[in-house]
Amino acid sequence: MSHTDVARAVVSAPPSRVFAALVDEKARVEWLPPDGMSGRFTWFDARAGGGYRMVLAYDDPAQQGKSAANTDVVDVRFVSVEEPYRLVEEADFVSGDPALAGTMTMTWTLEPAPDGTLVTITATDVPDGISSEDHAAAFASTLSNLDGYLAAERG
Image 1: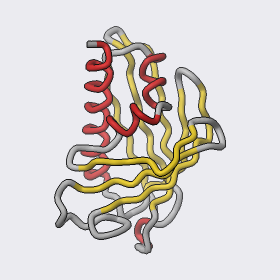
Image 2: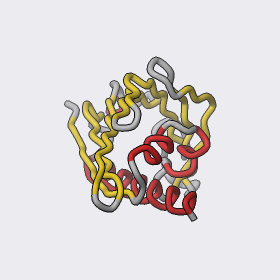
Image 3: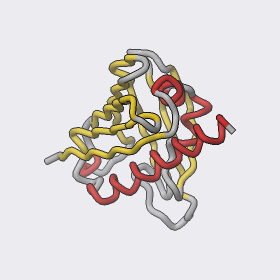
Image 4: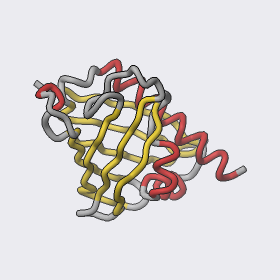
């Protein structure tokens, strides 16, 4: 049985700049990995029908990953790229664990807000192997990283 997780935050940049960071390979590798992880892309194509493979490594070598010893690997397809307000991705974890099987859909929605952009991440069909609490922490970290990345880019 899968579930849905949602997170929201205001990012201090206009929707056009936020969207640009969502679809830029160099930007995304900087802000997407949550705290405690780093990532790299093995390929990246930010258009509808494109996607990417991201390899994430835990900073703590003892941390068990979804794909290997301390590694998560995720294959993502961009389903919809609607600049500058919506991005829809389908994600599959590379894992032999049945609790992580299935395709999770991530919808990023950007809305103008008085202090920047309200970014909403809606994850549907989240595999049961990912708890809502872990997802909430990862989303909060990622959104904070995105805001920090855009602030530094402005700086």
